[in-house]
Length: 219
Image (cartoon, rainbow, N blue to C red):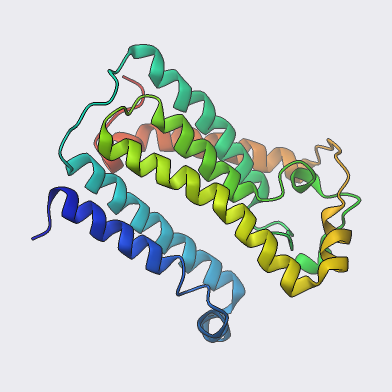
């Protein structure tokens, strides 16, 4: 049975495979043909969450090597940052976004009224970056620094990779047209509903955090 560093390495290998194989065009196309684009997005999201939960659990079981001490104030950093991350995810999931992944009905995207995409081209990757950097602060042991540091790097590198891929698929001229978005703040009733749902999801996750990961962010 894998334990310690071995389990953490295995979890990262599975994470890498689960985020490279399913999105390869031949594989993704076959899956989408069977379960639809929305089904693929839901299945891929569920797989990502499951593997992420395993990696976090594996980091908690890895040998403890302290790099900096914990202090009570550090807990406030992820509490604030994750409220923003949940809000960003709620405003972005299932909305048109041909410039990144996770978008639906991308043909409806209007660069003149891009919503959140006018400010953050890759909202889900940005939310991941917030999650990783914020959780680095109160987790100063080697295993968690490796964990959250790699995810922060993964998010930053992912933005560049997705940009290159979308430019290749859309063509430089079309990508530039879509990427030339207007930065406007316009809260629609649907946007307000998403905002409320995001904050409700954040509140629910706060209370489920200890059950999911064995640590309460409220204590």
